[in-house]
Length: 136
Ligand SMILES: [Zn+2]
Image: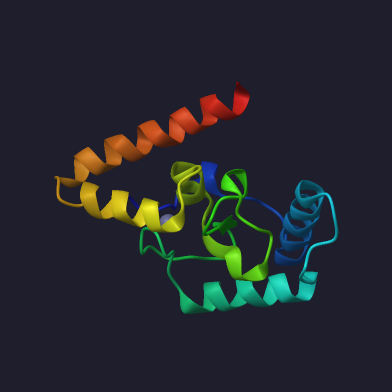
């Protein structure tokens, strides 16, 4: 997968405001108080960024390109527990869509058997298609 450095995949705002916004959106989505605190979410994000790489593509994970994903998607009956959280690139999160982290890693391994341009084309289509599906 290509590196995630393009500006359109970055989110602006400080670490504090971004994590607060993520926390609020998750709580809204859950419709009830989350089973973890904002401080616990920030600790998970900080630890993932310190680890250095996105679990999906292996490229650098930074304060400007991360997002909070779920191993088991909420849309597929995943839960809001802190253990279901996975920090990855915003772009990788959008490409992954409603796949589990396990399924997405299998798909990535499969695509890795082809020349890089094949995988990049499929990822670009998934990214674009995901945007279309969210509008529908
Ligand atoms: Zn990534």
